[in-house]
Length: 331
Ligand code: NDP
Ligand code: MG
Image (cartoon, rainbow, N blue to C red):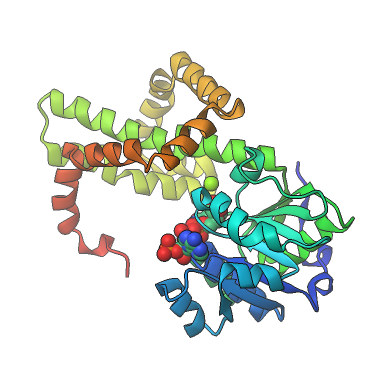
């Protein structure tokens, strides 16, 4: 089992007297900046001058500057921009101002692992990646619980890169919940694998394929929607709270028996081979190259597929049915 680090393994003092720049005041940026500041650390945030995010930082009482100004001033620079923007802003506004012994931080390893950013040798390179969206990172900090984080060190110039990263993790509340150590390689590859195979790619195809199967057999789309899509949340919530067994215990005996005996006909040998191929594309950099070029081309494939997805019958019927269930809307 992996070692889990807590508050007593992290010394905030390592960052006292240092300035931390948060580049990008979005989902992660606003949460990490406010948490660090409330932990007594000196924070300067950066975003596009005059943008909504910039105004939000001001309203939150976080000092805000341009990326170049923040990078120039800071000892520790956490890049929390959308991943595809990192290399552009890094080259223009961060790299020119890096000083020996500075620390460069990330919350996702893509750009370092796939060499889109190659920092100089005389800085520390670390990752502190909260396992949840920014609003959760902020809310759990305020509640005193914290959100679990991953920590990784890519480059240890100062000899205390790990201590700095752990102090940062403590500053955002991560060590209250627990921090696990990983590497840029492991975080990046498993993150991409999870979102392609299981969380985003796998689950949407499973929903669409089972929905289409029922429609083609002549069942009503509304009934198919409830069975193949709507109820998924109840199942996932049970698994999330108490593991697979909690879910099996809470569904009917018929559902349990049917699921346990049939599931591996859906996710079968062929599916597992496809998973291995997808992992291979990730590890060889083939997926990364495709995604980087897609970004440089202005996202034509992404936009075309989004359009196609929006026209799928499950989206049409889903919209009508969700309107009947106003309690589904977020407050
Ligand atoms: P967001 O898209 O929420 O926020 C990025 C912010 O950067 C936005 O305010 C954006 O402004 C701003 N921005 C865009 N371009 C520039 C620029 N040129 N100069 C200055 N600011 C700019 O990103 P996330 O918080 O989702 O992601 C940040 C990092 O955290 C990523 O590496 C991601 O992988 C990682 N991460 C994200 C998680 C999540 O749940 N969201 C979870 C764990 C890690 P605008 O909106 O105007 O474009
Ligand atoms: Mg992820």
